[in-house]
Length: 237
Ligand code: ADP
Ligand code: ADP
Image 1 (cartoon, rainbow, N blue to C red):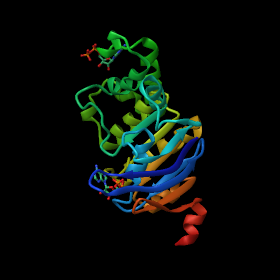
Image 2: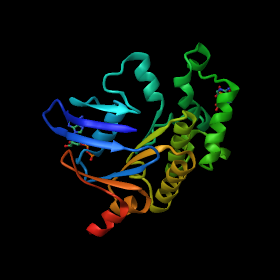
Image 3: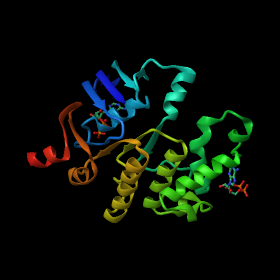
Image 4: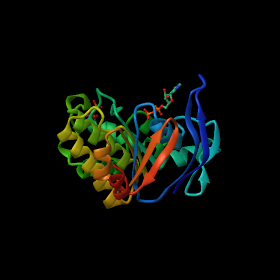
């Protein structure tokens, strides 16, 4: 479903973020990328939706090149990809519901939605998404009143409201305590299983990777140095 073909990324300062990556990520996979800080995990993840532009090579999604896509075509491809960040990236002073509704923006180009008024159907979708991550009762609470774990669940709900087919999560639990980490990872895993959403998660904790992944990729200095099942990752150590 996501295919990297000889992908290289060199930052303007000469640092190689990705070195000749060939990788196929399959539909429905729960892929965890592990590696030390600076290994290239974030560069790899963010190159999928072109939050980072690659230097050479090509990335295909369902056989279509996102690397060469422009304008409306790129916008439609990006709509299928939900992004989850370590720092949640919510609008702090807005309600939880408004934050989740922002996942619907890509479906509209009307003045009403630009001003923040969404059709009732979208509100229902947003509330359903909140229900799926067990946080519907916070719909009318301001985002900055929630705990870190709750905020991360809101950002998962935003990706669900977006009807993303792929979720990219860049260190989603790096700032959370162990109990909250488990809740957020459980939510991601449950959504992956129930909705079949292809999920790619960056983690620096190999034990956590083993607990949740269907496949683990290890990165070092911009290269993939391990690619295997959880069993293989366990046999190695
Ligand atoms: P990870 O997510 O595994 O911590 P990154 O993908 O963030 O790794 O970084 C990979 C390499 O690219 C590192 O050497 C990092 O310093 C470098 N890098 C990341 N972003 C930039 C940038 N905007 N400009 C220059 N170098 C960068
Ligand atoms: P405000 O405009 O100050 O946010 P409102 O009373 O208009 O207050 O709405 C309260 C909350 O209801 C909003 O913050 C939003 O979370 C939610 N809401 C309900 N229906 C809609 C809708 N159709 N579009 C956008 N937000 C909605």
